[in-house]
Length: 66
Image 1 (tube, rainbow, N blue to C red):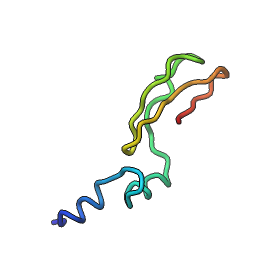
Image 2: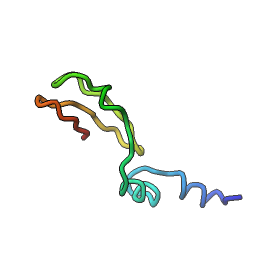
Image 3: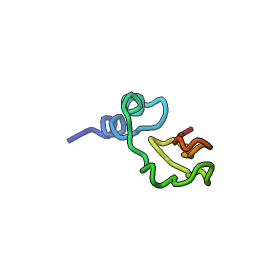
Image 4: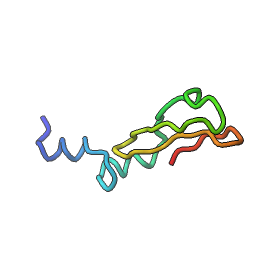
């Protein structure tokens, strides 16, 4: 069984945490590109690894996430 401290270390994924720093080194699926169907359509809010982000499709139809 994990101690409370070890559990916190492994479960916290926010910015600046050990596990958050590790997971940010890899691609993490957030949504399907089909969920952003039209260029210059409404952006979609995404919460990923404890951060609030915005997904969008630009005028050329390319998907972005900031």
